[in-house]
Image (tube, rainbow, N blue to C red; front, side, top):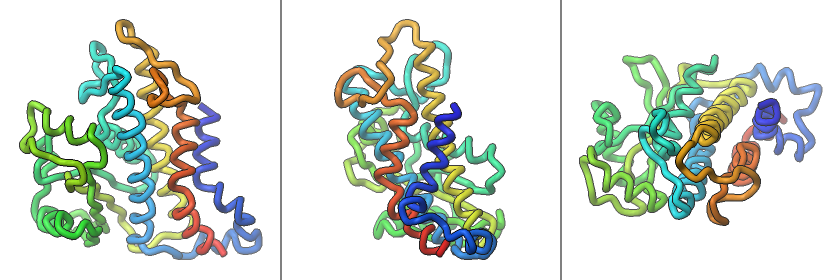
Length: 270
């Protein structure tokens, strides 16, 4: 587990290191000043989420199903030998964040959710109609909750998303297609601007959430009694009945997402 959390530190430091790091004489100031608007930070963490979920959906769920792996909404039940569906992977990340000291909120909603509790209402329902047209993020201040809120389009990026939602027994829409706006991820934060340190804390809390839920999945596999357990190592389901370790999975996330995010952090730090 220590190795995993070292990797988390790497996720938020790799580009700083490659660019020479935060200048020592400025690091304390950079950490204390308000350097990012809440909109910038929520966009950063949303991009990290897009990369992570797309990788999980396509490379783990999509390719895994082709190898006979199972993914189920009841994956945590003792008699179900399966992994979390993409929406439940996100829910696991959100649960981890909620348990952290970082006041970052995350949830997924839709106008045709499988779970009725995730149906958008009020202002969010109105903004989601706009998102379905232009796929642009929407920002607003939620007066009831006193939280700055951002909504980002959640697209049907893989066949696994489409088939799962179309075939689900509780679905309220069965004609989803690749590329459809299926819903929106909603992020919330109480402050209108963040320091450098607060921004890194937000990104770290998201990264830790991905570790927590992925590790929970791997732990679940260890308890499989009847299903064929995939070999866990440095290979992916595209190569056979394999799953990457958490280190390998997160290293791929880092390579795909860290540059743009860390570029913002490096500029702010200097």
